[in-house]
Image (cartoon, rainbow, N blue to C red; front, side, top):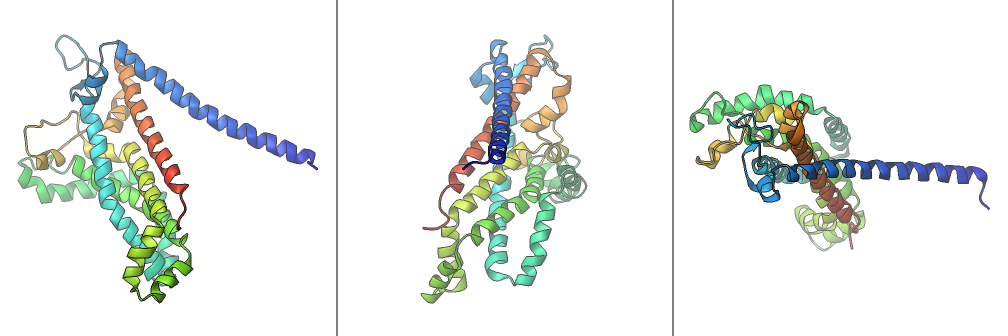
Length: 305
């Protein structure tokens, strides 16, 4: 027998779920329709994805012809995202293993709340820290090597360090949950067979929690690629640097990425230039959506066999 209150609650929850789906589809539809307008106004798909000259308003051209080469911006987002994930992943998983299988319960009670606090730190705070601490430190370390001490601390290198600080608590927290999902009997069985604690963690616990750990990494990537303010503060670039120089110099001088340009220039854009920024936003949205789909796919797998 179904009571009227159950029917009402079911209906309300269904309407809430439908509303969320409609909002998400509306965002995709809105950005999608706006994003493809630029390809009828002088831009091409290959030029947009692979050219590095970005001037959608034509302000840098004598004849006012716009340039829609977003390849450098896309590359910047990919480089700082992948770089930060490559550094943060072993640190996060190592810290998660320490807190779940090595440290005492007292340390776990201390460090877990600290991680949760750091997860909620506003990005502007981390960006400000990067601006006043990370950038001057990099200037002192690599300024003489790049040949330009004034701007040497900005760029992809500083952005990667800032993103590592941002995503490390997120990946660590999710990794801890994934490792705790592995039953204690699995650990006990490994130790009973003669494995050391290190062998138990590396050959039993980590493989059993691989799906959850991979989900943590993917969610960290999703946060990193969409970060705007903190990255913009330490990138400090207005154009893609020249490629006819050592890769080391490119990493440690002012540079650009997608989110920086959207945050700085979108408000003053119009016409085809405004459509071009909608295209950049759609690229970010599609990338984040792919990350979420991958994370859901990974999280649907069993934590252990």
